[in-house]
Image 1 (cartoon, one colour):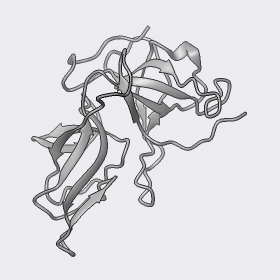
Image 2 (cartoon, helix red, strand yellow; image 1 turned 180 degrees about the horizontal axis):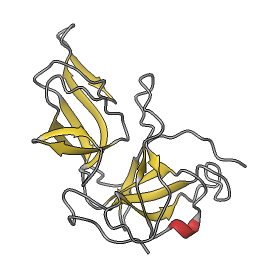
Image 3 (cartoon, helix red, strand yellow; image 1 turned 30 degrees about the horizontal axis):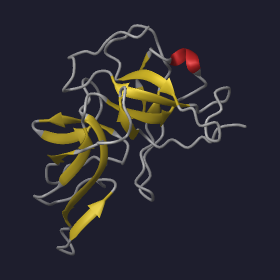
Image 4 (cartoon, rainbow, N blue to C red; image 1 turned 120 degrees about the vertical axis):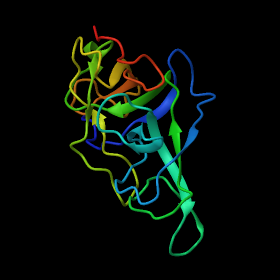
Length: 190
């Protein structure tokens, strides 16, 4: 059975070596009128003390939603994505920022079980959806070495009904390798 090609960013599933219990999030501010959309499941970072879309360097965690006072309706608004360019002084984002958090995500290609222990960059070739608010980020091609790569592959989603290891778009389990609150450059892949 072929896997669906439907990127969904990074979905938190637990901590390395544990279950999904106690999977928390931390609140961070987004600056008023920040122009870049951030989708549920996107990697994020900090810039000048505010949450920002991830582009390179150390990642802070994974964005799971936000709230703010809508500048038009003046009502508190909760969204699973930040649409960008919201003029409000109270934009709060919710981020899974535990350096030991693990996530499931779709991989580009067919890396299979041999990818475990390797590192990978994020693949941003698929845009997030403004309809669903879900990220389009995926796991890039796994590589040995490369301690600065954002992700460390730690497992494979073992659910055979959604994950055929012999087909493209395999779902892997990862942790953030180059984490803002972890080691400064991550560890090399095997």
